[in-house]
Image (cartoon, rainbow, N blue to C red; front, side):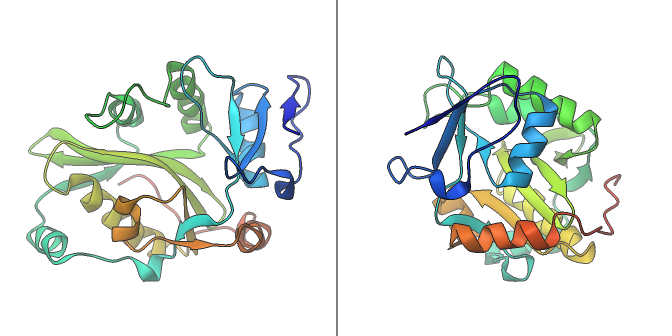
Length: 226
């Protein structure tokens, strides 16, 4: 039975209570307060829902992740990186990145990054949890991504691209910095061909929970201003 969250409690059900069909649906309801979102990521779940739906919380099994040492860089992307085709910054325009990620896509109707979601993650950015990667081409924002950093784990949320391989360029640059900063895992949440092309793979939810337990409270060497 699906658990409905109350606004006056931040507690989530155990991850093994998540549904098998649809895979990973753990709970519904509650709110998108910063405190609840932080609790959710620490617990191993995340919000994902469409406009008009209640807030839905997910913890799929298996979980799609990317280990920094396993990043796959295609020949075309490697060429762009060698040429330093784009300029990459961190946390220079979080609002513009999340707005671009929320913009309509040719292959999808609507967006799950509602205005309420944007407002919630902007608050997390103000609190130092959420970070953005901006990819620039001669001063124009052409790609980027955002996510949360906690301990030595990075929780990816969404990316966008307006130029050839721009989002992958930003992601590859981020992964290199995460390696240097001592991060051990990037949570990609759900599987996609795009993520698999970058080296993401599935691990059991129980293994993912183990990484949370081990690394959430370990300090990293991150310096996000770049």
